[in-house]
Image (cartoon, rainbow, N blue to C red; front, side, top):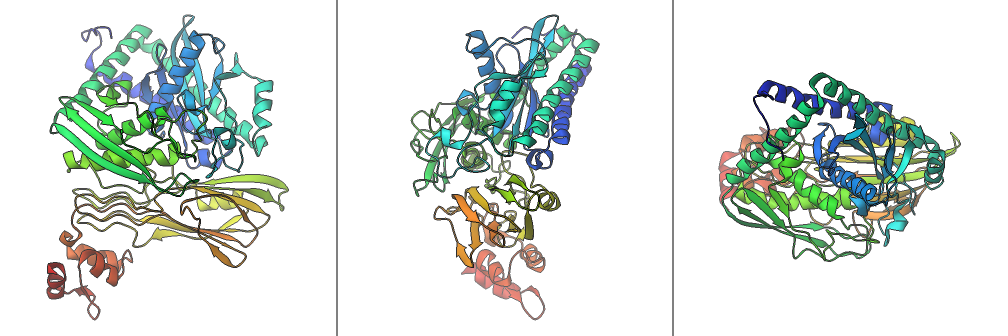
Length: 585
C-alpha cells in the first residue's frame, strides 16, 4: 500500500470521499430495486452493489442497504473474473462490457444469486470494477425456485454460468440471453431483472465518474487506500480489547435434506494480540444434500458476523485483514464441485454466524447477542395460474426473532442474520400470485426466555387459490432452536405444516422438503424461530414478564414455566410471594 500524504488528503476531503463512495453504492442498490420486476428484488431487496479494486477485486465500498453476506462473496467473485481474464479463461473486457456469473465455486453462493461485473475505465485503463448480485426467483433445475432440498449434485439445482459477457460494448448479447431464457422458468420476466441489474451498474459508473472528475483520480485512489488502512486499524483496535485466549462453540444444521442427521459446525476462535483466527476443524464432512457451503460464503459468513459485533468499522477489505479464517478443508464448509449448495447462502451461512456469536459472547458478553432466528425461511412455490394463463414462481422469505443481549430484549420479526431483506408485502404477493395469506402475525411464545428474552418469530399461512403448484422448502432450525446465551433458553424451532386433501403433512426433515404437489384449497403453514434468550430467565424483572403476558406474547402458564413468575388471575398482577417461592424452587 502506498504511503499517503495526509497534508494533501485532508481529513474533511477523506470524510467526503468516504461518504461519496458509499452514496454511489446506495444509489446502485435503489436503482436495482426500483427497476426490478421480481418481488424478491423489488420489494424484499435481496440484492447488493459494490465497488471493487481493479487489481485484485478487493472491496472498496458496498451499499448500506445491500445484503451483508455479499460483502465477502462479491469480493471473491470479482477477483475470480479478474484472474480468469488474466490467464485467458475469459474474454478480455472493453468499455461497456458486463460479465454475468453465478458459479458457486468461482467465489459465489447458490445459483440463484446472479452476479454482474463491469469495469469502469478512466483514460483507457480500468480504474475499478462495479459488481452487483440479485437473487433471481428461478434459475432452472429440478424444482421451481432452485431450492432443491434433496439435490445431490449442483446440476440438479439449475443453470451454472461461468463469467461470460452478457453485455458487449453496452449491447445485450442475444445468444447468451437466449441460452439463459431457455433454461429457466418464467423466462419472459427475467429481462426486467437483467435490465435493472445492468442499469444499477451504469448509474454507479455515472456517479463514480462525477466524483473522479471533481476530486481527481489520484486523490480518490489515495482516499481508498487510506480508508482501507483505517478500517484495518479500527478492527485491530476492537480486537485488541478482547481478552487473549481461545473460545469454542458449536452450531447445528438440522440435516442436509438427504440424510436425516444434523450437521455440526465446530468453531475455535483464537484471539492473540490484534488478530482473530477462526478454525472450523472438527466440523462435519461434506454432505450429500444441498447444505454444503463454498469457501467464499464461509469466509463472508465470518466477516458479516464480526460486522454485527463491531458495526462501527467501515466496510472495506481492510476490515477483514485482522480476521484469519483457516480453510476448512475436508468439511461441508469448503464445498468442491459437484457438491450441491442451494442452502449455503441462506441457511449454512447463518449457522456459521451463530457459531461465531456463541464463541464471541464468552469474550464480549456486553457486545454480542444470543443467537438470532438464523433462517431465511426459503419457501418456493411454482405452478400455473389458469386465470391468467401463465406459469409463475413465487419465492417467500421471512424474518424471525433476534437474540437478547446484555441491555435489551431481542428484535421481533427481524430480517435474516445475513441480510436486510424483508418479506415482500402480503398485498404484493397476492396481486402477483394465485395465493391468499389466511394468517400473518407475530408468533407468540417463540422468543427464548432470559433476563433479556429473545424476539418473536413470524407465523403465516398461505392458501393456493387456483391451479396446481409445487412447493419446496429449504429452511433450518427445525430440530434445534436458536441458542440462548449465558443461561438464556433457546428460541422456538422453525415449523412447517402442509394441509392437503384434508390431511396434515410435516416434512420428515422438519425444515426441508421439495416438490410437494398442491392444488387449490391446499395450505402451507410456517412458524419461524424466535431468538435465543440472554441471561437467567429467573432474573427477568417480573413486571416485564407481566407486560409480555398482557400483550399476548406469553401465556400465564408460560410466565410461570419459563420465567418463574406467578400472576394473580383475579387482579392480573405479579404475585410476589408466589413468584419468590417459584423462583427459589
